[in-house]
Image (cartoon, rainbow, N blue to C red; front, side, top):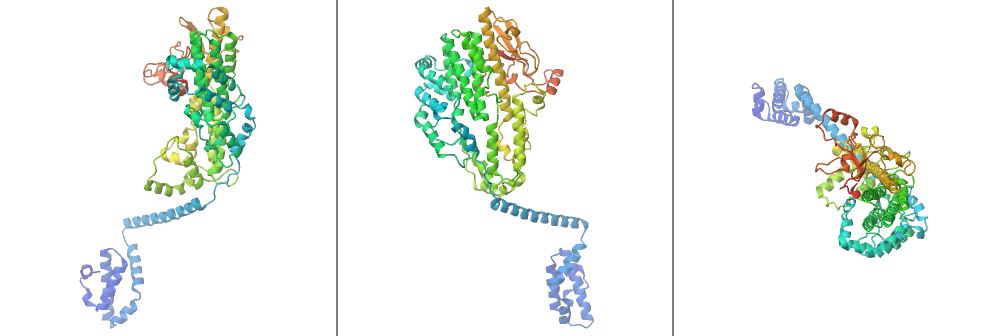
Length: 620
């Protein structure tokens, strides 16, 4: 409070008109009010006038100061009165600021509560050993009846692969093109290894693969030097004896299943070389052994195991169709019938082509390790669970070490995860829903309305909605859910390839018996086919006709229009099975037909016999 401010407020009353102690009291009170400058000037003028009146009435300065009371209390009362008289715009802003302050206080208090609960709250309670339950039937199989230890010995006996062959397998070479990499060098190697390959064909006839879920095992150095990353049977047995108590399902390994495709490629190459040499029976034996490998891969009951099986099935189906088109000299009718029966009965265990049993068990085990257990199957995400999930997923990459600010940000945000993410019951419900949708998809033709509507094809798509917020709110499903729709689509495509290969064998047997190709597939029923396979896209029998080049078998494909067996082409002008098997909803198809040339709807058919070139089985 300055003399100048007081003078501007009321020129008739000045500090000099009252004794110094009263002027100082006025100044102290005005300063404590913390009001606007103009308001302090008004207060000063009013107080000076009050004291001047008292002095004029004959009271002393000391008496007036004592009667004034506590300056601090007086300042607070004056401040409250003045603020009530401020304009409306200030009143609105003031209340808004108070509201923000209250919200901030509540947020800090809530965060403190959540942080205390997150860092100090209940921990997950592991009540079931899912790994032990899963391994029990596998470990009950006698060691001598398991395929794995004998497969290990066969791979060791095969020795070092020729460099062109090893590099081709390492790069997942284009297995469906019919080529054999390495020329005469590789052909000579296969001739020298026929005894070992015959052992391989025998080993894979075993009923069980016999590889349990185990904690990560280092590969055997001797076998790894030959190009195979597999643990020795001795280390597997030792791990079985020591047990897997406490090991989460998502931290176990099954290298045997992921590497069954490589021996299948060796057998596929041997079959191609056998066909060139007119040894069709040898080729048929290789195909049958490949199908046994596919059967063994399904023992894992996981998406990866089923996909390996389907890839092997697709490779056999492609080679069988290509061989029929080019002739299969040396293969007897009984050889071909045996292959056809094995393929037609795939999957031999009568389970769906994609089971998801392993993934669901992995989810149940993960749920008990990352959520609290509040009874009734519910619970919330825990600190230990959050760390468990983030520590279990690296996708084959070593992430860069986070910086200080990044670590601090994660630590601050972590207590909010149990609030924004799914609880245990809801996450399990959504996982069950997605798994059920995938299982329906595997048994539903691609042209069915269920695929077109998208409720099957994109059963897990909701996990990707909402950007970054969607990822956090759907945690941990957004991290752990496999690509179910893609797997289901691959299963349906592989089964059509299988059916086409069975038809190809029936066509070849008919040609041998009658000296010509049949004019209709109905001529193959019921002696060689129980019925004509149906088209995935329109439910009618697959289209068939004879051409100058031989039999032509095809599906109408994605556009659901019969184009006479003209294949769908990709952007490079090459036949494309991927484009032919796209799932397109009927509304889009109808619009495209009414507006030709305005969409990218693939035009053409899915040609099955002869197989479309340039479609690598290992990539589908």
